[in-house]
Amino acid sequence: MANLKVNVLNMDFKNPILTASGTFGFGEEYVQVYDISILGGICSKGLTIKPKEGNKGTRLWETPMGMMNSIGLQNPGVEKFISEELPKMKKYNTKIIANLGGGTIEDYLEGVKKLNKTDIDILELNISCPNVKSGGMAFGIKSEIAYEVVKEVRKVCSKPLMVKLSPNAENISDMAVTCEKAGADAISLINTLKGMAVDIYKRKPVFENTYAGLSGPAVKPVALRMVHEVCKAVSIPVCGIGGITTGKDVIEFIMAGASLIQIGTANFVKPDICLDIINEITEFMDKEGIKDLNEIRGIV
Amino acid sequence: MKCSFGRIIENDKIINNIYKLEVEFDGKINPGQFFMLKTLDNSFLLPRPISVYDVGENKVVFLYRIEGHGTEMISKTLSNHEIQLFGPLGNGFNLQEIKGKTAVIGGGIGIAPLFYLIKKLKKENTDSYLGFKETPYCLEEFERYSNKVVVATEDGSVGDKGYITNSINVKDYDTIITCGPSIMMEKVIQMCRENDVKVFASLESRMACGIGACLGCAMKTKKGNQRVCKEGPVFNGEELMIY
Image 1: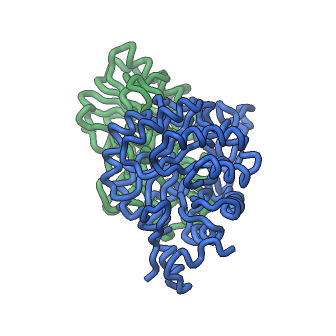
Image 2: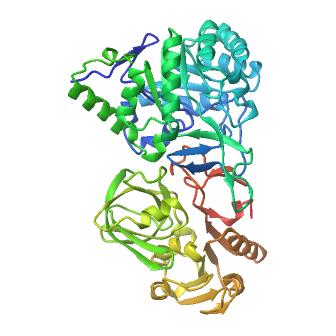
Image 3: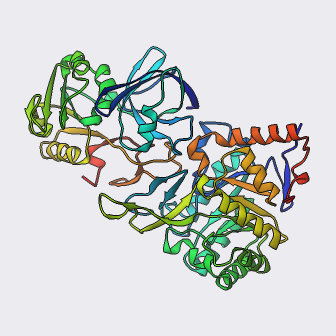
């Protein structure tokens, strides 16, 4: 029987499957759909130091084998997350990753200091949300700007620090190497690709912010290429994200070098898809005679 | 609630781009709830939220309009094939709050969630007001469970000519329930507010997850952001700000 356990950042995960930020709320909604303790971990909805109401107008738009979103980081704020959501999440018997966004370095530092005092397992620093000015994407485009924020966060952060990169970065491997130098313990990528849709009947952009984030199977080849490049460039663990919907997709990312995986848009396609994905990985490994994922990690 | 695959018993065109879909399903469903439906062929990505029209023994019935690519693909799925079925979702109508003389006001495909509702209400207390652009549908079914059915068509081909909102005097009722185009529901809510009549509206929105996680359907109300999929789709007219 295949062993899906992975040890990353000196932590044991049941399997490499995490749910991606913004696609799984704080887990609560999915408890009634399936046993979410089978997951390797859950990444929280993107948090900001102050609560956010999110964007006006259309927030979702389907595209061929993909979707665009412009939610705008609607969230209850770090404090309410800690007091109301985290205690519930801790009962799910899976790793908890808090995803933190910010508009200024001070925002990030304030959030990190609050999250330090909790028992989250990993802090995922979002320097890549394309949908709000304060979502941090400004930090995720230029490596030297990312360096500053990651370095400052590293100084105060007592949790394992995973930095979530934007595919809109000027140079993705340079960005990853820079974050590693600044003290990141792990890298996750990709966040959504900046895209656009026009409502041709209304003769205006679909989204109030004109541009929105593209995700889903349509972005998978791009995500896989970027994960591959980053895995070759850094020596810290990489968490692969981007359009993954099947166990075979997961295997591709692991062969490209990923240690962990996040499932995002696919949770919408079928709410219990992570269960299918985990079963498919086991099935593939058994069929191919793979006992441990380390046997195939980074082989391509 | 679980995500399952249901066998399609029937998926037939009623008229023009309106279809009726019957799927095998065993479970409790409240009037006004909805399911996320998706074909198994991956011809589109996100399941589509479709409200429950009727519930029978071991089956759920949907009335839907081809609105875009997703519903078009659903309409092409044949009987005896399976469809991905996730639900029932949302709050549905609270039957305890629907008291006294009641009118349901539906516009176009907005009549869908009202049918299973009126089946649960007292026939002698319930009037149905149904508005259509042109040829009406499902009138006989509504007649079976309504004290009276009033129809309006924009082209005047059947019933009153014009909008259904011109055919009702809301003061005649204790409770009004509405579902249809936003502009129609706005008018209904406005009339009810002016006359101090209790009103509930069933809304629709684009959504990805259907259970409150993606926040794609969040909408500003007097109680702050509310999710159409989770706190709704049925809202008390009082809470709605956009109207």
